[in-house]
Length: 438
Image 1: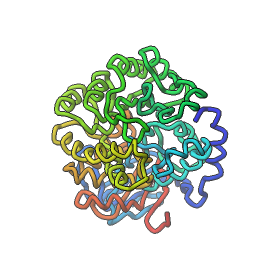
Image 2: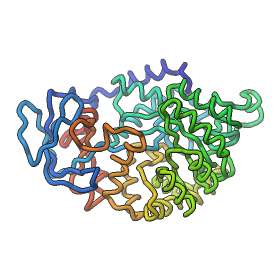
Image 3: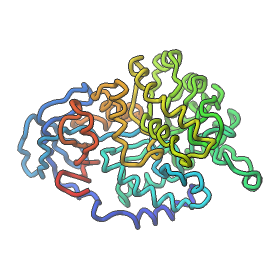
């Protein structure tokens, strides 16, 4: 989706903004009476706290159930309050289905824009107040519509078009027949496809021109692209370095989709901020990531989802199906090994592969992999903020953004509580609360 699609997207956003779920206007002050509070810095669960919110920020955190003069009180007794969650790997412009491969030929960018509005709303109401959208031309426009208050959704760091090599995981012409290929011509850096260091620099600069917030590269083959290999390396180290160095000029960080070992090594050596998926991560790669300070975003949800759908005849094209069965099933085990190996882990789902709004299920899968519940919650709060390079969110402390979610019960004792979010606040505005239909 190009800048020329901004007008249809704005129209779609305005038409679809759901009045019944628009955020309440923020009062002068709000006092949240939390039964428990998750301290993301220490990973500890604290007893009752009152969180005072003013002007979209956390003004103070008081012990117990404190009375705050002039504040609107919200009773979250019996609930655990946590910082708003961040999903570092989503695709809000799409959602997997058996029709996904044909829809790219049948639907217009405006169709995907309309869909993205509903996906964004579901994501926010699931407790995710921030996301990093790693690939999709609709996301910069959706980000702007949310920031302008046209629609409800999480705060978005948008990659826009992912950067690939010819035939790589994000080559938009994979699977096209000869007639279409000759009509369109070979994609280049403007389309996010590179084959040299100069191309790499141009592709990053184009993302800047397009209004991206972060750079995404596909360092290896992928599962869902219409191409044979799911793990072969697809960039040289020099190309990755050119992308990373140019990205730094614009204040961008670089996320690298990578399944295969060699592609991961090249991406880490090239200086990327994070490895996404990491299926065939070896001890050597783990050691290199620890040495370089590279983050790992496992996306266990996506692996589980595609492995399950690969069992269904016709859900994926036959070119894709064996990759989904082979690669998807391994990601959860890799995440457990990476945690035990001391690799820095942050939260991401690759949502859009699975249904939007189900993002919190990743917490359950992380715990199944052997990651403690408190560590999983930190991965979606303070650790995610570190990956994004921001220090104004991810913790419930005075001066930080008033992004707060609450769940009934104790998610440290029972991680399933994360699936029952019934309070969502973003920038001090309440989008859902107990007793109010979502």
